[in-house]
Amino acid sequence: MNGEPLVILLVEDNPDHAELIVRSFEEHRVANKIIHVSDGEAALDYLFHRGEYADDQSVARPHVILLDLRLPKIDGLEVLKEIKAAPELRRIPVVALTTSESERDMMGAYNRHVNSYLVKPVDFEKFGKLMDDLGFYWLAWNRKPPCDASAGSPQECPEEA
Image (cartoon, rainbow, N blue to C red; front, side, top):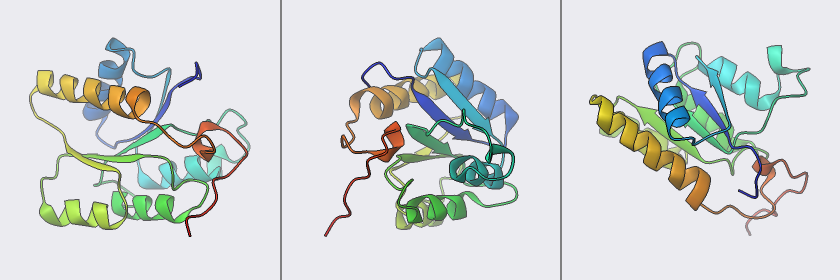
């Protein structure tokens, strides 16, 4: 990632799940910064620099978004839809990280252009392994276009024809 700080936006309403994710990433040194918000409205406010994030110059564009689907205020699928509809955000990888094994939820997420759909394991060790693999894949191994606006570059990638 060219030495830049790795930023994850974690959108998770369950404080226990959020703590497990944060601890797992810290233990495996996956990210330099994890921004945790607990509802869909706060996620959109953060991403679009609205509300409490409107004047905050330290709001960093995330390298990846971990999105629970069942969220208060604004549902995770609606958050996903808004992210993927916004030209300045659509190239940020969004990973649905949910307890739902429902085919309906999975299809809803992929229909809204989620980049990956992961079901949270109930076993703590398996959960930690999943977070480790997830971090390495999206933040270390995955390659993004050089003009990716999510990396903080003012240059935008041209739209596909």
